[in-house]
Length: 390
Image 1 (cartoon, helix red, strand yellow):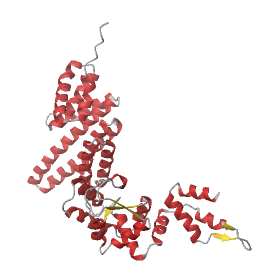
Image 2 (cartoon, one colour):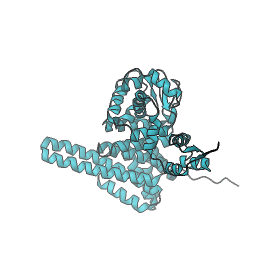
Image 3 (cartoon, one colour):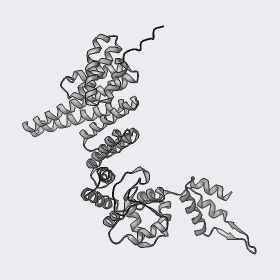
Image 4 (cartoon, one colour):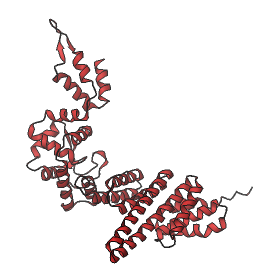
């Protein structure tokens, strides 16, 4: 019964199970019956123990048995991400870390891997010098970061500069590290830029789940910062979600991007009016850029709601795009709006009127590698299958 209760309380986590068993011993809850050789677990201690332990409790228990000089190193390691090298730890933490790392590996706090290969938790890496280290139990690492890391900003700042300046680092390695540490180092735009580049690389490899998650991280970095980049990233995620058949999510991203562009455009025009003629011209140029973002968002929205079976919403989005002068836009945006217009005409029972827009959209999309537009118009343009002669 005791073992079953401990397993349930630990949630199947071996590390937590060991920690709970150690806590029972530490409290003196395992006692011997007076006058006999039999042992038992004190019920009052067990009931208190089995109250749900907090993450802070878990983190404290993980560190309290370590030597004092090593505890600080473990806190630094916890902030470095899913895996880290000896050189990185030495540069960020300072001092000679070799003995401490060896102790932590022997004590099964950390595990050590080879220089080449796949690191834990799916993070790619190149040469790190001396291989990589990672926490044996990621839950312990997360708990330390959340509850026992008081100097996280300085650690992220030093690590960010370490990876920004270090020579001979593979591109994916550098971008991954700068993205991970950028937000904590007060470099949210740089972090977002790195996440976006990593998302495009993942998409190029056909890893669409990873690409979407990386764009999610980029957008979290851009909350309240760089509204133009945020709008562009929302559109990028909308296109990806459309390609994955997530039409409602693509529509929502397109609408969010349009709202962001509208707000930014109004703010910059307002600033230009107050700053004078030259600033006003500058703001006017930005307003044109924002108009194009809005048109692109409306085109993606129209394609997404068409695929989702909402033709009325598609017509409304196309009407709004045309009102913003949908002819005076970049080539890729033009291809998307033409595709949306053609599909709307097909839905309205005007296939002849739709054909020129659809054919031009398909040609542009093929040359530009625009999978969203290609996918959207392919079903309409695909010739019907001929029945075999009997």
